[in-house]
Image (cartoon, helix red, strand yellow):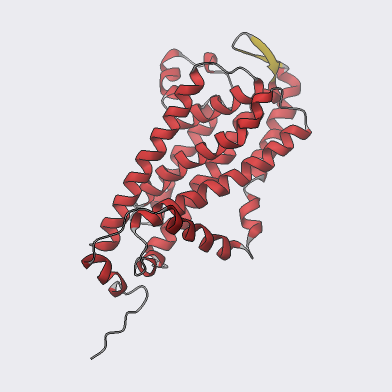
Length: 277
């Protein structure tokens, strides 16, 4: 009697449970990116729509409120408030694009569409799936960051040659948040748990020196803010666009690299546990 493997039934992962899993491969992970690009080729409006939220913040708060605030002190140097807020919003764009793609979309594929069950019937490993999905999420964040950087350039809000490194920095930010977002998603049993995603993102967006310098906060709150990933993302982008680059940039980069590597590791192991056991 011939057994038919039906996608989504769990039978297609039988061989993956028996045969040793291959290691993570950049070539195989790129196939996940290609799949997502094909899926979204007719829904590109969904991809670019995420750019508008930080853009509206820039217009309303950065430019509107900036007219009242004037300048702010940053490392002993006075800069326009709009130039202070804009790089923070760019970092937030990279975060939003990566987080939303690595949480909501991943959850749907994992729990409802059963996309990964079918994918793992091929030579793809859970590590390949995790790496591919995280890469796609950071690409989405990079798209947001690129369009926002173009707006900053048009408005004259970039004042340093170091700004050529802004997009690589945005890729790093997307990597960190996408990896952690995907890892967190594998622990979520239902849609209601996504309230915790907003609970984490919104306070970071409001307090991670997005709109105010760190020195304006009480010392206890400063210690909390410095521990958040968006703070390091904002400070990294801000230092590049303003030219105030010093040794702390290494700390910001190291934080995001470690964050991304840990998230990638956890996401791969969790997918293997959820799909192959």
